Every structure is written in C-alpha cells, then in structure tokens.
Image 1 (cartoon, helix red, strand yellow):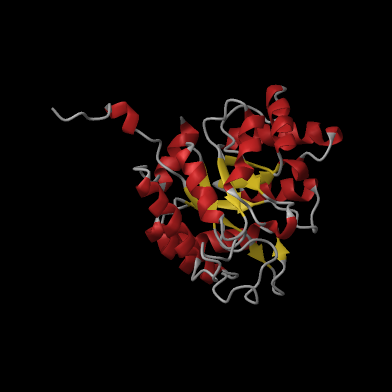
Image 2 (cartoon, rainbow, N blue to C red):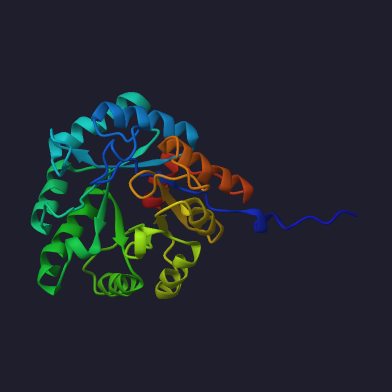
Length: 282
C-alpha cells in the first residue's frame, strides 16, 4: 500500500507575483533594460505576464526622466499596457513621494486617476496624527471606488502602527495587501530571508493577504521564503537589479521567472490577474 498526503495538505493559495519594473530613481544608467516610457512599460508588461506575473507596479517619469505623479501620464502608461496585454495584468499605480510630493498631492493624484490598484506608503500618506482625518476620508473613498489598496510598510514598528490605525477605522474596511519592505535601511540595501521574521512577528496572525519585496541578489531567496510561508511577492528592477549569483539580471521578466520557478518547487500555483481581483472582491 502506497501512502499519499491528504489532499488538503497539498493546497496552496495561488501565489501573486507582482513586478516593480522601474521605481522612482533608477535610470538606464543603472540597467539598459529598465523601462521608463509608456511604450517600454508596455513591452515589459508583455514579457512579465508570460513569465508568470499577475500585477505590474508602475512609476511614470517626466520629460527629464524624473519621478512623476500625474494622472494623465499614468493614463497613457496604463493604456499602453492594456493595448499590449489586455486585462491579463492588474495595473497598480504608485503614490510614492520620492522627495517631490506631500500627502495632499499624492491623494489628489490618486483621486484624479481612479486607478485599478494603488500602493500607499503608510509613513507618507499618514505621517502623523494630524493627517489621520484626511486619510480616513481618502481611504473611505478608495473603498467606495473599489480600488485595490496596497499599504507599504518599511519596518516592524510600522506593522504595529498599521494594525492600530486599522483597528481604529482610519484605514476603512476591506483588504489592504500590506507589503513588507525587507532591508530598506540596512547597509547597501541588501535583504536576507531572515529580514522577514520581525515583520511576521509584529503582525502576529498575518493578514489574509501580505507580500514582500527585497533588495539585492538574495531577492529570490526572500521571495521563495515568503512563498513557502503563504505570502506573496514583488520582484523587479525597482528594488533589485541582480541575479542570485550577483551578476546583472537580464530583464524584469527574468526576476519574475525565478519567483515562478520557486512556486513550482513548492507545488504552489500562480495567481492570474483575475485571481487577484477576486481576492479583493472576496
């Protein structure tokens, strides 16, 4: 008689692989394949969706290549991506300040854009108690508009603050898909899988949806660790330009492909864009 594992022991929630292809500050001097224009983002989108990504996290740039928060620029980039891949990717706009914008400007751009999904750094949107009332109104609007919200958390202390704000209703009701940023303020911004432990400890019982991103050549090791713990992953040139052996990665799609290969080793299926949309709707 051959023993088999119980079917329920083999079940995994599908892994959401997000790609952050460019970020706020990198340029082609950092990597020649870094996408900066709407057309380049669209080509990148076509490559990453075939590699296994379900979501693309985009930054747009001005004519000088600087980080930009502008609804029209986001619409142009989103339209280019949609022409290339249709609805096969969730398109997530960033609201990152990058030293150029304050919370009211960030909120105004999101309201004008009404994106399918948006990432919001907790420390930027609600830097202190004085910003809580405006933030509560903004988050209530996000819920009414059914915009997929991702909250970016840079430290275990921010996880505690996130939980407190959520508990007091400042962030409204609904899924937030918090993103744990591993190693953000370590020397050289190099992350290791162990960096995930304090975040999960701070979270206690982790939220139903959570993800991580990491810096440096151990990005894929961090992604595999998060995948094995039931989380989701964001990979790409915004945070890491390197392959696991320390050489320059070929493309964003290569980073996505590595994360997808890790999921296959775990026997964990990959989420589709419609699957991501369903997670928020559940």
